[in-house]
Amino acid sequence: MTQHNVAFLGLGNMGEAMAENLLKAGHRLTVYNRTASKAAGLKKLGATVAATPAEAVAGAAFVFTMVTDDAALEELCLGPDGLLPALPAGAVHASCSTVAPDTNRRLAEAHTRHGSTLIATPVFGKPDVAAAAKLWLAASGEDSARRKLRPLLNALGQGVYDFGDDPGAASTVKLCGNFMLGAAIEAMAEAFTLAQKSGLDRQQVYEFFTSTLFNTPIYKGYGKLVAERHYQPVGAAPAIIRKDMRLVLDESRTHLVPMPFANILHDHLSTTVAKGEKGDWAGFAERITDGAGL
Image 1 (cartoon, rainbow, N blue to C red):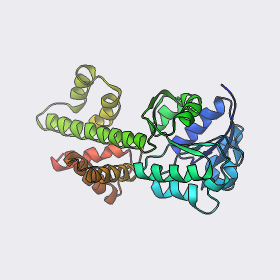
Image 2: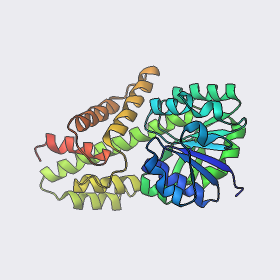
Image 3: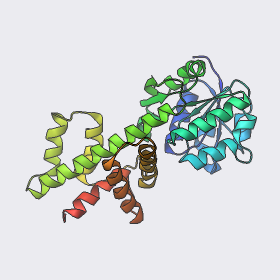
Image 4: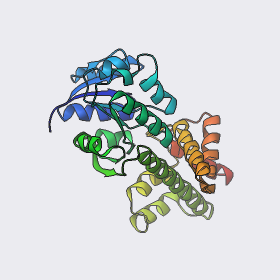
């Protein structure tokens, strides 16, 4: 792979793992994180640590961002010392955060005015999957920039799927995917709780279904958490996915798509956040077992 000057902004559990894989692929990496101490591990591996987003992207051919929400992404791009004015002409920004499709569309327009390109590149996978470079990625935005970015995305995952020129399209895919994950967790929580109240062992039921009809990574991975009622390690916090479900509902209202299950998931996650429960977001499954008196 050709080596490039790459900037990575946002070093949470996902971002740090992805940035490390770009280093392993041989790229010259500059990183930025609002809490600078989180960059210490990457600095030891050879990354340069920048004090501001603008400093991080100076001279970068490619920029990756992985932050919590829309406001954080807009602040990185357009805030004081934001990356957009400092981004070199022709640079490609891979926007990996889970945000509203219109947020990436607006920011893509702003990039075009500055002579750079934003490509929406949301990812599917937990931090351990990111560390193993086994993410699944969706990408959308201007075609030539997508093709230039593709080799770097290949270093992060096991597959990259293109969804056309609309920089909001991949974000829609990400929201649909997170909704489907939540619906699967809800279904397993209801099924395993019914089985338990009927006198069956949750773990045995889980093992049967994930060895037969539902022998897939999602049912096996999240199903194990639900069957054991032990929501560790944390892949994503409940507050983060609650935000995602709100974005799903916003899109459903914009496009006149009834999504009653999305409302249920959002309500369960709201209760989980309000109760201050720690653990993986799949812990909203406890709303079902609580309601059944278990």
